[in-house]
Image (tube, rainbow, N blue to C red; front, side):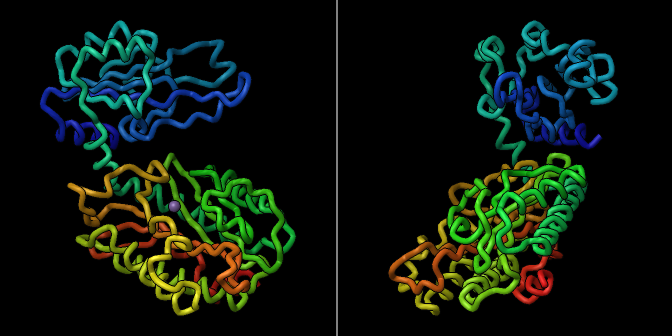
Amino acid sequence: MIHQKRRHALLNELDDNAIVLVSTNPEKNRSGDVNYPFRVHSDFYYLTGFQEPEALAVFSKENYTIFLRPKDKIREIWDGKRLGIDDAPNTLKSNHAFSIDLLKEKLPQIILNNQVYFDTKTCQLDNDISRLLSNHQLKSLAPTLHEMRLIKDMLEINIMQKAANISIKAHQLAMQTIQPNMFEFEVQSIFDGYFTKNNAQHAYTPIIAGGENACILHYIENNKKLNKNDLILIDAGAEVDCYASDITRTFPVNGQFSRAQKQIYQIVLDAQINAINVIKPGVKINEPHKVATNIIKQGLINLGILKTGADLSQFYMHGTGHWLGLDVHDVGQYKKDDHHRKFVAGMITTVEPGIYIRKNDKISPIYHNIGIRIEDDVLVTTSGNTVLTKSLAKEINEIESLMS
Ligand SMILES: [Mn+2]
């Protein structure tokens, strides 16, 4: 029912004679005859709730037609059960269901002279269908649909809290398990195991980065040994029912922060907490970044690491957050008419400042190879915000006592 509601809400925002086409992702080959695990297209899932590959939905105010794979005795023995044409209308609440093989034949009779909304960029169609659609003036669905996806409903918030809770538990387990000389992939296996045990999967390739590897922002090799005097940065989040969580914690491999590590960590933590605290409806969405960068700048100047604010980008070179939802870097505009938009209740954003200090002759060696990021998932509420990931330790004493 929720998907039907969403289709109606979307159509209400489009032209009266709108007809919407949305298809799922293509399957991707990994090697030989093995594919990557299939992941439904987020727009398609949001509007249909249907997770099989090779499917396309067409709907207007009057009609909803789904094209999908027909039942197939042999393929179902090899690849698994299919919903099939007969059961689709009842299960998916569509008026009609046809085999995906009939798409080329049926589509012209369905779209007729209506205004077609379709995103060629996000949804792939075979050449015949693309040629067929090239006779129509297509309008993009994304601006309207992605505004809808940006504001989460209660069902979505509950699923995302569930994903957050699983991630929190896995991060706690990692803090309690990590020992010097373990390998990063052994740490990753804690997340693999805990997510799988809870019927979740990774929302993105996890970053398990010991010591200097934490200064590589998208480090995913996860294959080095953890040195006892290093920090470890873990950016890992579970996906539940296609919804992402996204958490980063950084902590000492041996359970005790050194003085230098504490100094840098406390700057990032102060930046993160103060950035979260400004989030509420009506505040511009770049405000958390402003707050975080000011605190990081001042903190690094106080330690003599930074001379002037202009050099900050060598230590902090990424944004302070992104939308979170069906995609880990979720859809939704950050600016409107070239100006940063304002927070609205129902948005979910990450807040993730960091400091990354590589080897550098001009900086005291006690700070070398320290890479720290702290990331939480924040829901904007009518009165302010709720941190979905708040129960995971991030204060220095909380982390040290959890690890002892
Ligand atoms: Mn993130």
